Length: 70
Figure 1 (cartoon, one colour):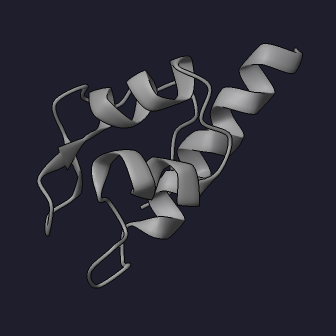
Figure 2 (tube, rainbow, N blue to C red; figure 1 turned 45 degrees about the vertical axis):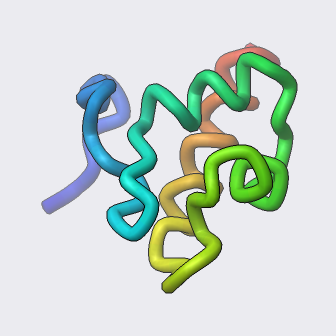
């Protein structure tokens, strides 16, 4: 299934199952100045266990960066 860039993600959707971190929490970190997956991990713990969520976090960071530079 192809990703639809115009589709908004569900704000309470879990990004990190291991640490129960939601997209809202990741977006809050970005709004507070986080610019890397490591900074988000240091704040929320997401990516600190199995690291399967790191790709999703990086995608959110990239999308956020694209929105601010557009």
